[in-house]
Length: 507
Image (tube, rainbow, N blue to C red; front, side, top):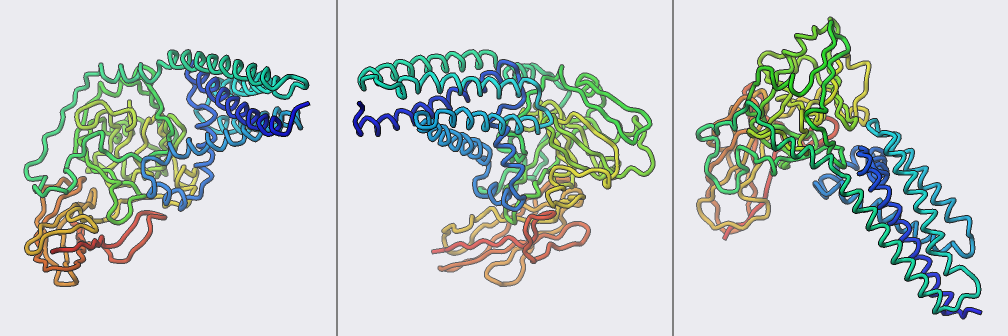
């Protein structure tokens, strides 16, 4: 007969068996994803479902709270919750032997529905779920059998359990290794990207674009510092040889383009600043780069847009969609392009390689589709895109805004003359003036660096400060004559407004 102490210890063994079972199923499922080159694994798919069901305002708040860590944290949280459930499942093996398998089946159903809802999921993603379920059932029985078997001495039970844990660990490690060796997709794409020689330039920085004040964001944003906001947990890996673009809908002639077709066309290059609609007043979800690509208006003209069309529905390889005003894509004065390069290099995978859309003057959620594979000429009334169906506006024009970079909020400076500065933007309109105000005094006109029509501009000036606390405010006026409003508005539904204000101390 087993004493009460062993009963208590056996529950811990069973809980450990549940956790190890959970990990084993995740490993084999992910290895299957890698081996079969599936686009989505069950954990990522479940995390994606949680993301998509999160109310828009809450999602934005989380992005501002954790920044680029939102997706890793969501995946980690999903995994932790799953393993906690598995630990509980393990403790039920002795008293309720049918419960574990029923719960594992239920978890697999959730995973299955999660991968099936993603438009780029294939049969391979479903197979991964099934492999994970089989692993759970087999490993659970294998690990818990010596613990729940009646009559075994405690020492024998413990030894057999440890031996089986070791075997499971070796099996999981082998499965993970096989999956990793099979994961050639991303590495193949990266290699293909490195070998590309595109007919593009690196872009010459305009003279006096940087005003020379340390602390202001550099006028050209390096690729690895360019802000990234998208819904992809794992960026799609698309080799140029596998990429194609379909242009269809309200057109006279459907067009299909391969990567070679696209880069063989006339390449346009331009400085364009991109801004996320989630950018709060004073936020950093804005960057500037030299983009190279093919003008979308030339492709649409070739397809022949039919009367009545007013939108183009863009679709990413991962199924993300956005609707772009047709007039923004056909405007002869706006370099809306199918971009293939960024700052002179082929697009980084994280920024849309091999092809993405860049549209000056529009927030990214209505224009900047990464991993672009489909363009449908249509009407706004016939579709609902990813973010607009969550309450965001349809048109998405970038609002005139300005930001203080120097000094930082809460900084401590010397007394006397203090250099201040930052950046301002009104893409596809241009900035006319920037003014700043110290401690409620008169507005002072800032010195401006060089800008392009579709880029941000740096501004700078000097203030005289005494010992104590101070507040600095900035506002911009664009070339249409509009001065940004002081009224504070949230990013929903179409971008934040308000004057950026910071506080600092001197002395």
